[in-house]
Length: 159
Image (cartoon, rainbow, N blue to C red):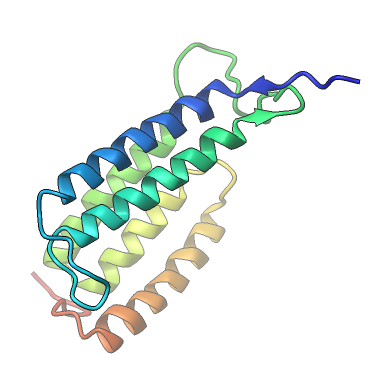
């Protein structure tokens, strides 16, 4: 019995694009001294990230081949021809809120705003879930960035 393989074209092309960008980062990083793990040069970080990106792209492209035809997930297909921009708009608004509140309000309000607004971009999230997620991530940001790493961004700033 022969199983016919189908290719999820979005995953295949997305993986191929990630491989190309990763290889470009490796090539760009090779112009600098890469060094070793114990004495890293300026080209080590872009080359390492490029390698990880290329490897991830290969894994995504390989996983695009499946034994059964893939059906669109519920909510993916729209009844109209316009794309769903809610997620993109919420993420962009969250970033803008982080920039503004980070400068004028401090780390805590900026972190809360970016997580809360971005979480509302997912249609499956409720306002209560976004609020709980934003509160939790704010606590994590305070512990990691303000307390442990001693980031030079105050918790609160007025004006």
